[in-house]
Image (cartoon, rainbow, N blue to C red; front, side):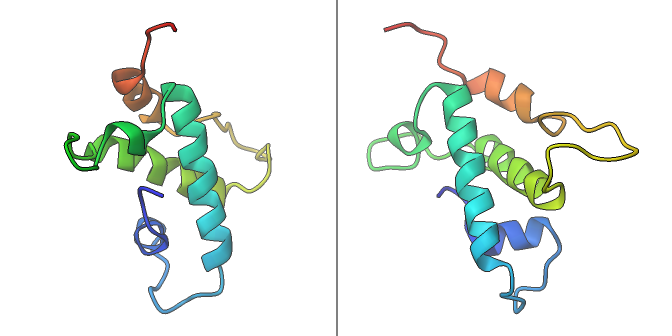
Length: 104
């Protein structure tokens, strides 16, 4: 995963010592990263952050963090009494900036 459970806890303002939701947070981060990678058309670790690769763009880490936090805070597919978008504001813009539009 490109962001850690500790980082998502910081995003959500969860006390670092509160480990009660660590497994759930890890699943949300993994699912968010998988979803972002499907939208991008490539695995993030195959393009960024490794030896002889460009560093991981902060914007991609932010997109995963925002989506994981959104899914953690909105655990159902719908929200009663509110308008809920499929992706948090900005995530689609970040994906659009890094997406692989090539075919083949």
